[in-house]
Each structure stands twice: as C-alpha cells, then as structure tokens.
Length: 258
Image 1: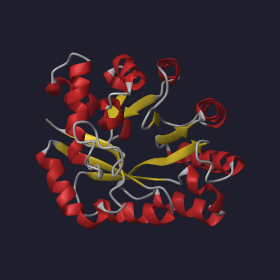
Image 2: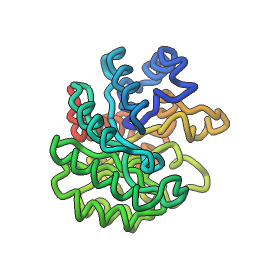
Image 3: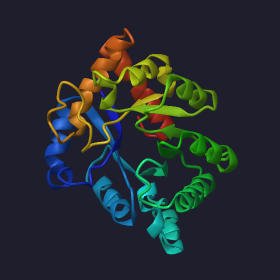
Image 4: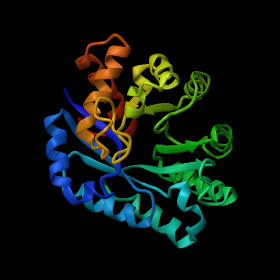
C-alpha cells in the first residue's frame, strides 16, 4: 500500500523538530508521499527547503486567510516567484475563514482572488480553505477561478448537498481524520458519495488525529493509515483497492510522477 498525504504542515512544530522521524514512521505505515503546505511567507520558504531533503515530498505555497490583513504586494510577488520552484505543485492553502475572522473579510477576499490569478497564470491547481464561508468561496471561484487548472476543498466539512455542488462544478474533495470521529455523521455521508477519482486524503497535521489515535494530540502522516482503513470499510472496498484509487487521484491532481 502506498498513500500520499496531500495536506500536511511539516514545517509546523513539533513535527518540524523531528521531521526525519516523522517521515520514517510515515513510510513504515505505507504513507510514502507528502505535500507540505505553506500558509505565509515564512512557512512557504520552509516548505520549499523541506522538499529538497526528501524525494517524494512536494509543497504548495500560499497565504492562509488568517494572514490576509498583513499581506503586502511584495509578498504576493514573492509568492509567484516561489511557485516557480520545481517541487511546487499547487497554490494554497488559500480561501476564506469567516469562522475566526482573524483577518478582515475584505482582505481575505482580495488575497484569495490574487492567489487565484497566480494559479491561473501558472496553470497550477488550488487548495481551498473554506470555513463558514461556503457560498462566498463558490462565488469567488465562479467569478475569478474559471481559468484555474483544478480545485480541491481541503478538510471538507460541509453537507452532502454542498459536496454535490462541489462535485458538479468539477472540483475535488479532501478528507481528514475528522471523518473517523463518532460525531462526524455528516462527513461520513459525504465520504460515501464522493467518487474515488475526485477524492483525496490528508492529515492536516499536526492537527486532528483520527480514531483510534484521537487521544494522541499530535497528528502526523503515519496516522493517515487509520483514516484510509476507516474509509475503505465505509465504502465497502478493500484497503488496497481504496488506497490505489485515491493515490491515483492525488497523483493526477497534483501532476506527480509515478
């Protein structure tokens, strides 16, 4: 079995302080590829540096909506330059977070649009963060994302109806260990309806360890095995067939070799 963790934050502590151990445990668990996600100028640069250390590690560069207030035009220009690195495979994560509103909503919208335009110009897929802002996110994608190569809603937490809308628009859905939680019936319903050629898996580590490892407060790629096992059983597939299918989707979405 080979799986790809399509959204991990290996530049975040405490994972960054033990990245060799994290990768070793990941490989032992069958998760043999990783996309570490940038969220601001500092972590974008760290992500690129990290990809140089491991063969099957790639990165996305982006500005998280939490940081939209502090983004300068220089930071956007630097983001575009960083995206030229050979191991960058997407723009993101970017989007809207109207739950916390750590940045003004006007700033979030502006920075989201600017990153969509970079993705259009460079022909990159986009990784979307959307929390309590589903309709607004879809609206911006319809207005400004028509030229974007591919779109994935990461850590999807919406309803089955919203999932169907995402799929109808040709977008992809990525699920975390949250789907294994006992109170995650809505996400489990979504997991049953997303075709494997539109489905990807992620940890979003170091957050949200899956059951039965939820008490382990620090998540890491190795634990994605439990998410994959749960979803294979939920969809009445063998683990090997399910892993093969979602890995093929991940490789196609991010244009990964192999």
